[in-house]
Each structure stands twice: as C-alpha cells, then as structure tokens.
Image 1: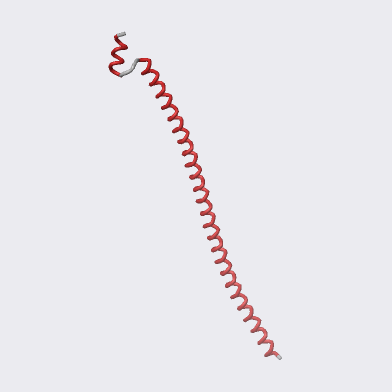
Image 2 (image 1 turned 90 degrees about the vertical axis):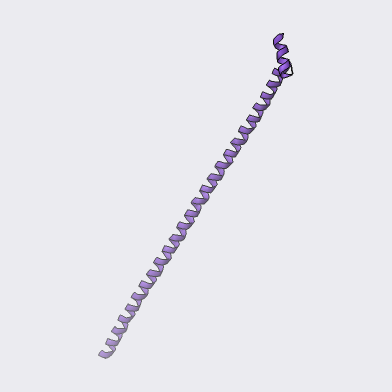
Length: 107
C-alpha cells in the first residue's frame, strides 16, 4: 500500500491508471510508426519509379543523339559520294569529248 501511495504522489495517478494510459499511448505510437513506415514505403517506391523514368529518358536522349550523328555521317558520306561521282562523270565527259573530237579530225 505504501508503494501505491508513493506512486500516486509522484505520478499523480494510480498504478493501474498509469499502466492503462501507458499502454494506450504505446498503441497509438505503434499505429503512428506503422503509418510512417507505410508512407516511407510509398515514397521509396515513387522515388524508384522517378529514377527509372529518368534512366529511360536518358537512354532515349542517347539513342536520339546517336541517330542524329548517324544521319549526319550518312549525309556526309552521301555528299562525298555525289562529289566523287560528279568528278568521275565530268572526267568521263571529257574523255567522250576528246574521242569525239579526234574522230571528227579523221574524217
């Protein structure tokens, strides 16, 4: 009985009341922790999704840059080919002109 009186004097309530209040607070704290864990899990999943989206966007940009570089290289190759073929055609025209001229002198 002395312990209960000291307990009540120091804490302002009976041990049974203190125990009941303590358990109620612990249950509420447990619920809050569960909510936080759930929210943390949701945030972690959203963060992971954002990272995956950014990685996909990065790969798409890299692919686009590679395609642009490929088109640029193809364009340069085509220009070089056209210039080379143009020179060859000009040279063959000159050969034909020379042959035509030399044949006209034979007549």
